[in-house]
Length: 372
Image (cartoon, rainbow, N blue to C red; front, side):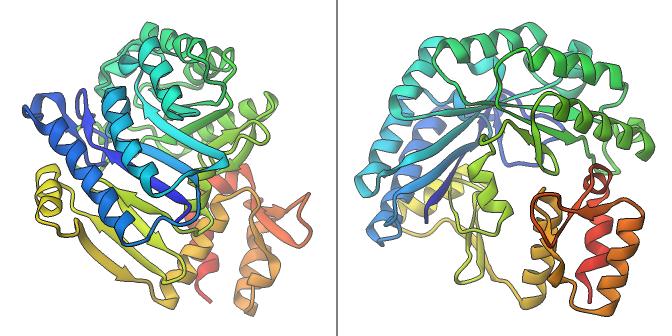
């Protein structure tokens, strides 16, 4: 396993639109942080003693939750345990997710000393009324100061997240946000369309599909004009600054997940697994020298084929034309090209890729092409 994901479940508050396992401060009990640290170190030791860590780590990703709420000394103890068993590759990428309200200069200088070299900061919006609507705990000023702090701390590889399709959000709002963000030397931007379950209280206020498409197409044009590659459906990067860890996911590579709710995938065995989504159950299992895995599944040929299409369509490099094996697939692809959802790749001969509009409608493309 050359790629490792570690899930840190603690958050300042639980955002109402977030589906990831996390625990808001109001539900955190005394001793939870220490219990989590001990449990993650136990999980690392369990895998290390089984000989899982062999090749040097090429990518590490700290997600959550809000990993930047974990003090550097605790983070240092966790990774000291990990590096007993393995080491970092010379050109490693080590990413931490962070929120603006949990960023301080001394803290991030200490993270850099541990080895962190990339930060992904969740801004989501630079309008205070939208931030309040989304349940975020930071404001515009905190977000902008946090960027200044990260660069002062010495980080040169910084990514940020925004949301589009927020109720009441306009293209002008997005333009203003991205103009302000790209004044900083950020190397990467992830922009996600806000999606909510039909029963969610804000669902009825979401913009319609045409407005959502306007947002997505505007973002694509804006970022390309500023020298960013639209290399994945929701991600833009300066050349050479793609999120290498996430590319492992998007290209079907193997990765190991540690922590409560973390997922793992073994490409050779075609097996996926997930840890239990409860801090206390996770810790109790490991304290009893048991695995914290909740379930494991072996993927069928049909699942592998579907995921192959889903992953390929969401990436800028697209897929080879020889994947179109049946007359039906070839005909469907011709129709998608005529509808300007697919196009011939200008740098990879023989490949088709999604257009910007095709990215926005990728589910429909996969539905057309995945079934033979």
